[in-house]
Image (cartoon, rainbow, N blue to C red; front, side, top):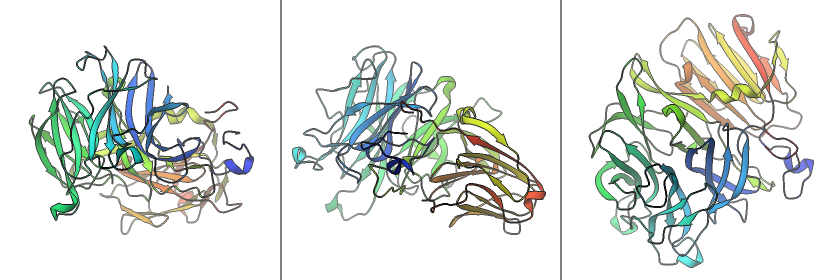
Length: 447
């Protein structure tokens, strides 16, 4: 895998094999997730000049399956309004903005004051467009939303079919001189994607930054519910009356691990599916020419539980196409030399298993699942428990309780660390276990 600027084996030893990484430089928030004409576009916060945060620019890659990515030139670069912070993208199928039918519109925060050119400029919301999905032009009349308060940022654009309007969810950070801490969210509306009107505000009891706002069908019903989520993975389910979001649940978590932040969902996905990608925050690779990684893409659905509707997260089905072979799970130890694993478990009672370098334990007396240093409660008292684990070179992502619990974990493996499954208790003889070795998405010419 000769893909670093100085291609040596040592420079690639920790490169994730099916999680997205930038070829070089720092990576963080996924941006502008949009599907168009057979391609999933992944834009992302990228520092092209170093492996630490800074010089924020929109990196760009495309994929037909959310796993094998083709790297493209940077889409949006810093200018006199600021460096290019997070945002979202949509397909303007009806040419409402006037840049061409099916133009791709990318909405982003111009972070004023974060580069030499933009000294004295505030944070504002801007637009860039493309008619071919490759070349992007900044709107001449930027910004489309002037500064509202503080470091306002992270515009998420979504179509509201019921009220025939475009919505922008935006995080507002209190101005430094306001005497207030933190921030809040606001919703804006538009009919032409260029002129925006503020319609309601929303407190940050759910968390801060990177708002996402989308609809999901209620199982067994023709009804849909709105989901409002934020950077830390917390979310609310509720309704929207055309002006304001009305939560119908308490604040709920999706992320029980140590490495997920700034998740965003795709727009324009076929069949209306909601697919989400998170940045695995804290996935540091010191000494390498690249830094940080994305989580596996997840499909989101609503699920009825004894406590009401909840968000279900499950890896996209395309993962199964990476399966090379099924490895028999026999005895206490199953060696999988590559460490690329798709492991499923269905068992009764306690479980104590090590997947690569992460120990996963379930205690039926407390109904708690523990992995690494993280813990998650499993509600109810089913006769059998289910688990799915995706393991890459430096991460283990755990899905429990049919996807109601997601634990993305980043770790740096120790030299010569065991790769595979190791059963540390008796559950290896009391359950149904399947393990598949996965192939790398990298090939001689890239991924």
